[in-house]
Length: 116
Image (cartoon, rainbow, N blue to C red; front, side, top):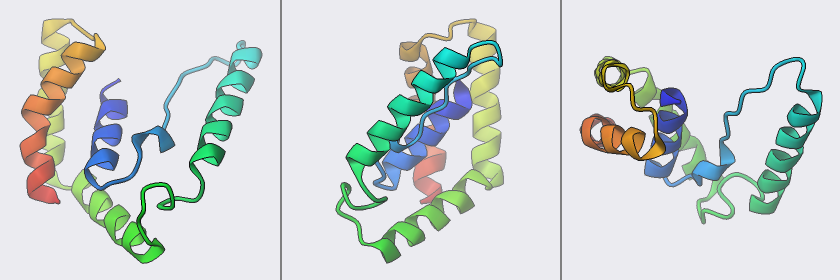
């Protein structure tokens, strides 16, 4: 949950449509669900087109932004903020999307903005 929210947030911040990323769980016993998840995600990515095209970003700029995002997610400052956020999430025992958004917007925005 937390990593999913973080990746989506960072993608949005660098101008990449967060719908290009999707993390869903399926066990080995859920073959029909797995097929449906992959089929739906593949259709969505095809609908969006090549990376950067629907976002209006040229390929060199896409590479630059992705490299900056990689630097950010590897930074100690963001990892520390993420760790503190997940600790708070566990303490609150509230894993709703609204609570995730509240925590991530509140605690991680500064670290993400500073890193970008």
